[in-house]
Length: 172
Image (cartoon, rainbow, N blue to C red; front, top):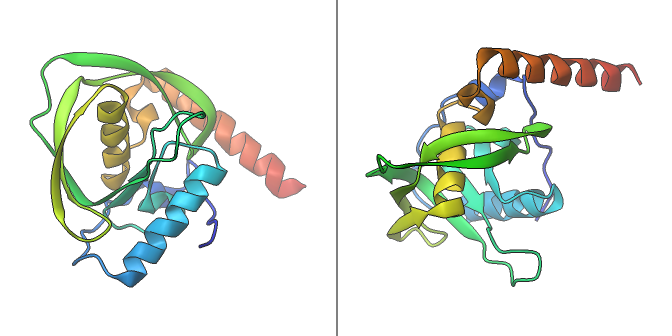
């Protein structure tokens, strides 16, 4: 397993629409293991493959709390089914938009259909933080960042700050 660099906004690679994978094999499992290690190291609770430069429809997630045993989840070719009309607001952050959080409104519940780590098809009911996180990560697969759900002014302010930080880091 290896920790991979996480791409940060405004890198145009984050705007790519991710392609489905043909199935789960050892190479894909190795990528998912790397993604999980990268996510834990960051630290974060979810990571889409596009965030590590692989524009394919793969997500890893672990919503276990600090005092709980790790509970990694793997989603290959995930699809959101039946998003609720009821909405929830959660404060979201993103490993590709470092040091920024804001409230985002999303459907309160949904179902997610996907292939798991072994390639078996699964369908799960998602609510609460899980529903928010899977929808956030699914956005990445469509080239959407959580800041795209904010006002244009907030989004532009965040992107301007990130560009400035990247320029300063490159100059060092």
